[in-house]
Each structure stands twice: as structure tokens, then as C-alpha cells.
Length: 328
Image (cartoon, rainbow, N blue to C red; front, side, top):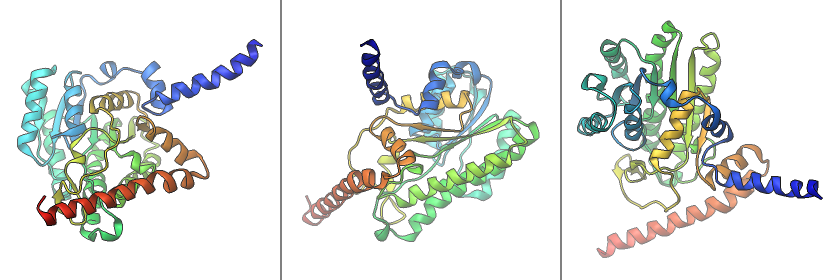
């Protein structure tokens, strides 16, 4: 009788635990038994792109409490200075520990100069966090090709370029961490953001190939972070059918993870040198596992969930256009 009860309760307990998870099993295990960020990261020089808002800002803020040296990069200098002040006021840092370094990921010709500036300031780069990027929301058939070009130039080529500039330095030292901010869209493709999804799939392929090329450099680790939706500015400022930033049309509301929690899990991944992690609550995490491991995934996800999302988008666009025409 006891064995029968155990046979029933253990699967139920496992399912309950899975439904409460907000990361994949490898990251969850590291969070329980792995190295703590406050033990593994202090004293390191960390370069964060896209540091002016969202995940990048929160990452800088949490790193500032760990006693690291920070390089903050993005295009908006004023916002970077604001993030710097926040880190100094609330973190464990001094003025000399933070370098504000404006950077445009699309301007790859400037990346080598930026890398030299960091090395001149701090003498080394221990961790490069490729966090900067752009997004869009529109049907592929309606989207101007310029949008796809910008997404590839920023999300993919910008990340590849900066990684290539930093990599020789890390290879010379035979150590370093390169973190690639991808997306769960790089695992589970989403409709209405085909260009964004493609850029993240490209990054995953680049990292997987680079991992093999660095087999003779075990001290250099590559980590791909794949979060689902979090509370960040990427959902308020994105491209639609043209390569012009807009807040129109409004995207469908869906559950988002707190940015602070996402960054906590990122730091655990960085501390434990995890190669690829999925950061998402339910049902997004469940969808990722289904897409990765279940053969009939297309019917489960594409023909049910995403169909509803696309219909919602069409309705939203019609309502927005009507409001513009009527002046409402």
C-alpha cells in the first residue's frame, strides 16, 4: 500500500515543483547547490552593454553590490550616467570602479577602440555581458527589409563584433567569461517578431560553434542566457513595419518576470559557468521543454497558443488604426 501511495505522490510532487520553477533544471540545481555570485564574482572587471535600462541596468545595479569594477555601455550617455549614480549610491563601489563608455553596437568600427579604452582603464576584462539589442513586433510580410537589417546588425553582428574584439585578450590570459543575452525566442520561435527571433537563433549558432573552437582554452567560458519576457523597456520601444522606433501598436499583455529575479538567476549562471540557461516562469518554461523535446510540438504550440496571439495582434491593429482615423 505504501509503495502505491509513493508511486502516486512522487509524480504529483514533481509536477507541482515543476509548475513553480522559473528556470531550467540545470540553473535550478546551481541555485541550490552551486557557487554563490558573492563568492565567485567580486573583484572582476565586468563590461555590460545595453546598460542604460532594463536588464542591463538591473545587472549593473546588482553587480555593484558585489564589489566588481563596471564598464557601462549603451548609446544614451545621460542614462548611463544615471545608472552610474544609482550604482554608486546603493552599491559597494567608488567612482574609480565605474567607467561610462558610450557604444553603438551597430557601429562595429568603434568596437576595437572601445575595447582598448576598457583595457587602458582597468587592465583586463574578466566578463563581457553582451546584453544590448533591439526588438520588433509586426508580421514578416508587412515588415520592411530595413528592420531585418537593423536587427541583424545590432543583435547579431554587433554582439559578434564586440566578442571578437575582446576574445584575443581573454585568449592571451587564458581566462574570461563571455555572456550572450539571447532569448527564449532563440529556442521557441515566436510569431510577430521573426527578425528578432532570427537574430537570436543566429547568436545561438555562433556561440555553439565558438564553444568548439575554444576547446583548447578551458578557462574561457561562453554562456547563453535565454530569458522569456521580463519587465524592461524592450516592450515599450520597438520597431514595427519600419526601422523607426515606436510604441504602436500595443503588444498583447502577458506574464512577465521581475527584472530583478531574472538578473539574480543570470548572476548564478555566471558564477557557475553554465553554458545555456532558460529563465522563465510558467507556462513559458513548459513551452520551451515541449518545443525542445516533444516530437509533435508544432501542433501543441504553433496551432494553439500562437494562433491566438496573432489574432489578438490583428484586432489591436484594427482598433489602433480606427482610433487614429477618428481622432479618438
